[in-house]
Length: 254
Image 1 (cartoon, rainbow, N blue to C red):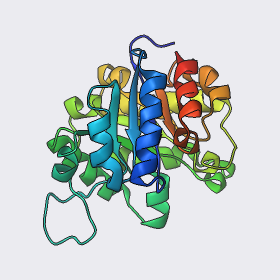
Image 2: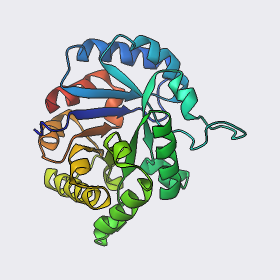
Image 3: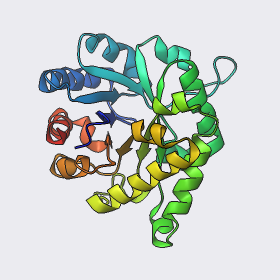
Image 4: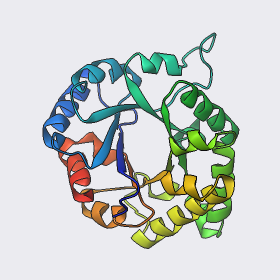
């Protein structure tokens, strides 16, 4: 286990859970995880549940994240939510550039970079997602795709901001498919991303940045994945919707 960087495990609930369901889940998580101090635990409910959940976790070791935000601060942007609105609910983290948003909302690296800058301006910590599709991996394009995404999505960040940014590597082919990158595949890609951060920023910054793995993380594979030198946590999808599985992932990571 890397002692330099504290593990960060985030649950991305995606478009799931009513407010009532969210409160049940978070109530159970508070009980299950009350004694965990070795891991930064982040839960990312849908926008509609942020206010209610924020009140319940106020006195706990759980931190609140949002699943997206606008790059704009306010104005005529129908359907969008800005950083200032998230801050009202004690949100500390925000997921940016998730593969689903890149795919369905056609989000570009440049847009994600603007969102990351806006997040930092509001003292939110962005979780910036990168990852290749199955076709890209099979064509041997993984490194090229990731370098383009990492450079583009982090463009303009200062060294100080980068240290407060989390990078989430999510192989698109392993999200919700039950497929998982082998432990070695995950480590190899995380090491490659860290080598890019050395080039873009410097070694001191790269050593401090936490890189999460996201792609069908389960209690059964958590320990092995988190034991890799460059894997600093997980961005958990489906398994974060059930208290026991999410808690077990965290407990198995320590």
